[in-house]
Image 1: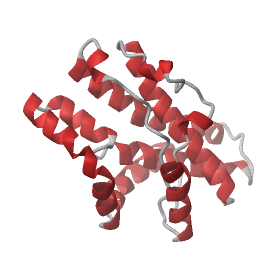
Image 2: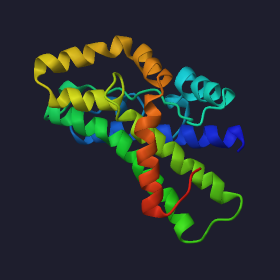
Image 3: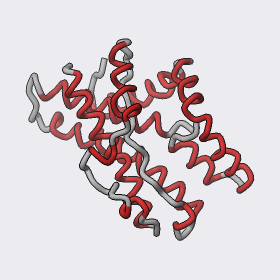
Length: 202
């Protein structure tokens, strides 16, 4: 599939992910993302050179079976939320859930028979990318969303320790990917999704 199409799907999905964080935070009392102009589908404020462009291009260059990337994280001041710990969990969940929702939305044209030989593989790729983004972000490694969900469920002392690991986040994520652990988490999700909606990704 054309690299440009993949990057467009990936960027759109990552932006929806980040905007969902911002919208949930705003609903729960923090409008930082709104004030900084991040509640928008305009890609320019969301583009992160490393996560949005270089990482997916690198994965494509090495013929990785899993392609993903990230938009620039939206700013959230969790102390502004009406219930900070519960709010942290809900804000963090909003991003991955938006990707799973997009995956389901992309299934609809397929199930309605509205696709052809061009649109079908594009929609299938869009579904797969969103399943990857949703699953990957639920991994409890800082700075991924899963770490904040875990931190929100932990006692305050542990929460601070978990969040403090964000300074090592990039290295931890690289180690996680290098060891191939994402595939172990992702494959059951993809296979289950394919079984539920009668789709074959591979």
